[in-house]
Image 1: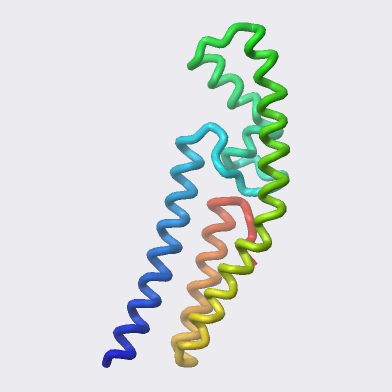
Image 2: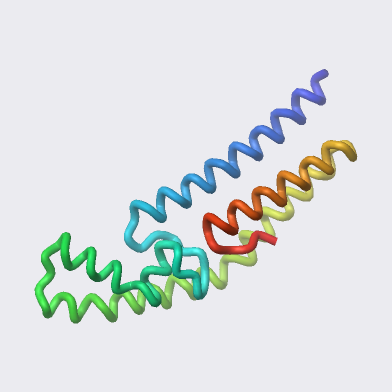
Length: 140
């Protein structure tokens, strides 16, 4: 009885972590003009607005802060440089983050019965698809 309760707790904790992570990323995307971004070439997330669409950020900042023409000219290269730097960091860190997540998932799978492992793999696929849609990145 204790083992099944512990297992249920681990799986529940994992799922809560996934939900919190996805919701947190979405909140950052919606409420921070520069956000965390999803990776190179992705323009649906917040950092994406600094790339092809960083004009969107510039327009919002210009409107909300009542920027002068001179400030607007200075803003454009700042946004472009911020985008380039953030993308470089993400390219560096992304593989490590995904590897840690995968290692954790593999460790969880090792403690499951074959039936549980099958369901867990389905959960992993669903989570990866959801994150790909939410963040524009493939998890595995």
